[in-house]
Image (tube, rainbow, N blue to C red; front, side):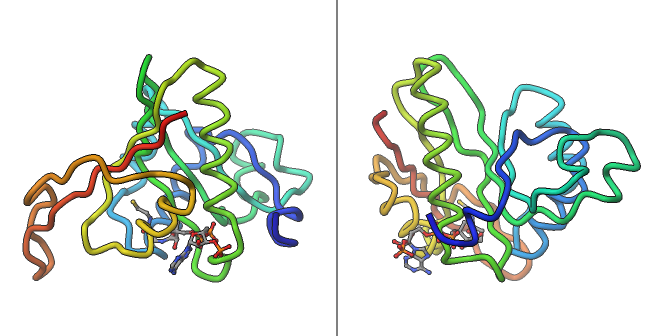
Length: 168
Ligand SMILES: CC(C)(COP(=O)(O)OP(=O)(O)OC[C@H]1O[C@@H](n2cnc3c(N)ncnc32)[C@H](O)[C@@H]1OP(=O)(O)O)[C@@H](O)C(=O)NCCC(=O)NCCS
């Protein structure tokens, strides 16, 4: 674990994190907005965030929201009996390449395995080689390719999805 990871605080994501998660997504070119984060965390998704530990970290409510610092990294998952799916993984650029994604993936693996899941699965854009390298380093392997899975938009053509899986 890096010095940075050791100094930060890993906790469960909650619905009131939605606006900060949306800001994190903006920083890394993600497509999820606040409503989508809130809907997922208020529904069946589960997740963890890494933010700086502080007096407000365990509190809740609007005042605690103002005090709580920005989120440095987050992972969102959809739990199912066999396969847990990674819905989103992001690390703010200034904190990248310091092991935060590895830490979140490792925590997700441990939790999914303890819950009896057989695999962690995910879809990643074929062009997102950096994320594929992160997943490969964590032990994920490509198991399928979905042609034209990501719709065209913002001047970019459709893009294939690589399906990756990690046996737990
Ligand atoms: C992908 C992302 C989450 C990685 O986060 P990170 O905290 O920088 O990753 P880590 O530091 O934990 O990297 C773990 C390992 O992955 C590999 N890796 C990480 N970044 C890499 C890169 N740019 N190129 C090649 N391999 C890389 C390395 O093996 C690394 O271990 P090492 O640093 O000891 O060599 C981050 O870059 C990000 O938020 N990207 C934008 C959003 C995104 O693409 N999310 C995934 C959507 S499917």
